[in-house]
Image 1 (cartoon, rainbow, N blue to C red):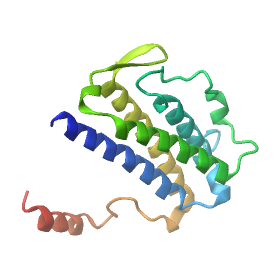
Image 2 (cartoon, rainbow, N blue to C red):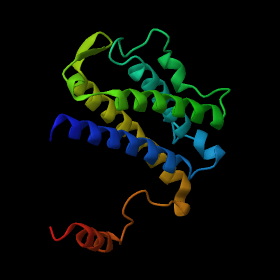
Image 3 (tube, rainbow, N blue to C red):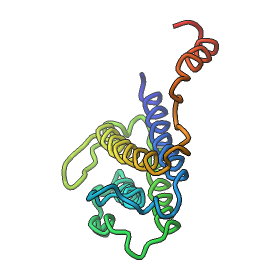
Length: 178
């Protein structure tokens, strides 16, 4: 895969994580949005607030400043006291907008540039992979919590159980035998 192909793929993967998190969170009501399981302090709200803060810090002025911005208060991302669902979703959207705009602006010749995160050097490719892994990790947590709280009302975000053969047949029809 060439550099432009890689950038197109990474952009798509980041957008998939955003969409998956939003589709999962949309399946729970206000109370479950803020609920956590057992002693685990993480809720969908906290995960979305943290992810929004992380994305804002890492991707704002991505090529020119350290990914851990001095104005970030990471510890506050793990408290939702006084927050509303709307305020958290606004933070999520703002963080994703900054990240996706920065990723969309990247060009092939940027991929080998060096950026820092907490003073640690990374190539842009490494920072992209690190960011995608972080987004996927927390999106998975959001999906797990949403699926738990939605219960029987859960609408799958991928191939529904029992539908694999049907999905594979449609893919074969679209892409030819594999």
